[in-house]
Length: 304
Ligand SMILES: Cc1cc2nc3c(=O)[nH]c(=O)nc-3n(C[C@H](O)[C@H](O)[C@H](O)COP(=O)(O)OP(=O)(O)OC[C@H]3O[C@@H](n4cnc5c(N)ncnc54)[C@H](O)[C@@H]3O)c2cc1C
Image (cartoon, rainbow, N blue to C red; front, top):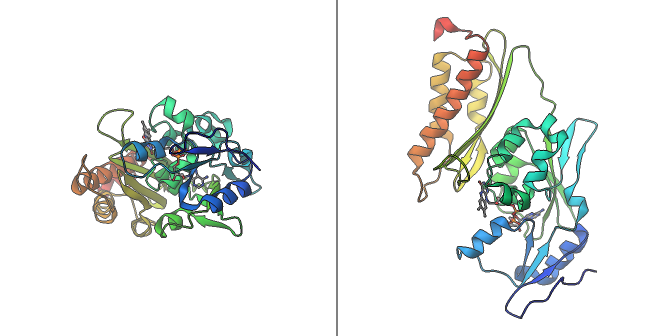
């Protein structure tokens, strides 16, 4: 059993450093709402500093649980990413660079290098608004978690849509599909984050996507995700279904623009309103799909 690394004066928190997921869950059961699970602590810190949540009496650090920082590929080509991996380590990993280019692109848009050294991928997802989520949604990510009794794996999009899970659940893996079935033609992936300045900025809008075009310009497959600010990122599944099998003509791009405007559940905050966010997301997605169309030599030019 772990002991607190150091015991601070009574009103200040104790830091616990379990070495297994089971031990972390036991500690959470023991301390209940007086404890919080901490990965890098970078998001939690902002909550405490801004008075959005009280600092609890006990921190349960995941930093010494080696099982949460692994990275493996299974026989089906799925990459299992330990949620405790820092964003910096994730970006530097050769396997991730080879198989998850979209995720690497998203990582490079998070905060600044000093924060990325501490901030974990799991913490980013657990906040439910993290900028990595749109990329993971497009990669059809699954979340694996346990409450000590039951283990569950569910699609990230369902996990985000469901009400908050058990307080004591620990995320143990993020599983991403990397073997993309590529039809003959063009495959174009994109991740774009818009903030109020070029870099080191909170997101106003974040979009990610993958579009696969047949040689004749028909959309073979399309995956689109949007988020930004306090919006919970989501896949635009209904719009994707409408677009599949259609030509990416001028009319198709206009339909896409209207669809993003209608389906993105943007949220107003001090930085930007809903209308601006919807318009920005729609413009970004359409411009990326247009790039794919251009890559394909502008098939269906007669309809444009
Ligand atoms: C200056 C600054 C800039 C930032 N910029 C960005 C940005 O550009 N984009 C962005 O998305 N975020 C940004 N953030 C927020 C934050 O850094 C990231 O979201 C980061 O990835 C959170 O990871 P963490 O390990 O620090 O999470 P923590 O703060 O440790 O935890 C976040 C939440 O996840 C829970 N948690 C963590 N791991 C697990 C687990 N395995 N199982 C169960 N629960 C878990 C914690 O209990 C907590 O509720 C910024 C933060 C700062 C301070």
